[in-house]
View 1 (cartoon, rainbow, N blue to C red):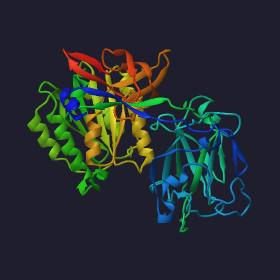
View 2: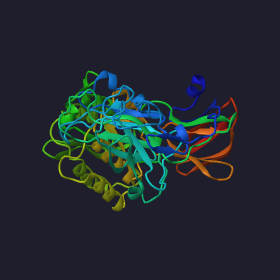
View 3: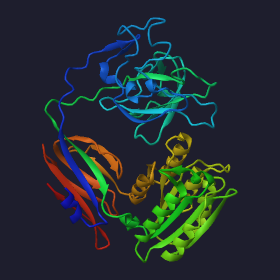
View 4: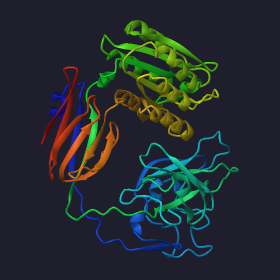
Length: 483
């Protein structure tokens, strides 16, 4: 594999189809009842994978394993009964995970994100989602189809607590991700403060996989050095960098702003000499600073200005986006904006509305957003995701120096859609996302270059690897399949 990657030009992409063998789920689904709730799909109804877990304050080691929230409820005895006062129903259990407590909305919120792999959450008659909470503490519940954009569907408590998603989604959609978070309360010094989660079950249908069927995973990955050059269809590159006081915090033994400056300097160094570049920072007293007007890049001068930055002040994201219009209004062609921030708007602006206003003004642009060390601040993360989504851009999490470098190098517009032989879209992916599991067969892959690349008769074989390489060529893009 490494030899083939080295042979691909540094400004290309690699579409990799890797095959693994997956057996059947085994027995046909049989309904099962836990604490008075019957799940028609049996144990397939319960969450399968931990996506992320952050504990708030005072969680003891015995109660901080997020894997304990997977699968069916097991924090009580005997199975299938839940009488008043039974073990695990009203207190701590090592077969559950605690989210911790926070004193106010200003503190970090403990949360758990899980994914349903062999079933999905949809709206059915009555409650759709059940959360088994062992200690009587309430939790906030959100759901997501893609793991990025979440919809609040209420708060619940109990063993189990029930959620009806219909009032929040209008009866539409299929959801694979659930995010549970603690609800602010008085200080709690119990062994398992905050809600203690034993299991999460969905009433939606299971996804059956036929026995002996071959499957593969599909991924779109970047090749080469750190560079915006992946998106040569853009003619202007514009960076908005958070230099507020929170960027003075330390991760990996370095100040966050120092890390960001080093990565951006490297990124700029890899831009072509003819690139048109602008850089604006925000911080101070709810103010921004145009570090470099949009113009042909002067590497030495821009590097010097970036290195002078120091973290200070508030986080006026909306103002930075508003002032972006004046910076770009007279610049023709498509523009790529990259916003890097570690926080939420703190100067009373509405950055999502400001991002939408840029599009409504007629500017040809996308905003790709990198949330830097922001996983413990869900409101800020949600706001940054909404900014990217409002312009058709991408959002990336980066929790350390290496992830920031990767996120900034792959902030490109390319997404891809996979269609089966009947023309049904079976997967929509993008760079940086894990690919799907696909049965062996023949597919069509449409790659979101400009113009689109449509690749028909992409064969997925049992126990084999198919490579699709995408490269820049003669001002456009070219793709080839190597079965």
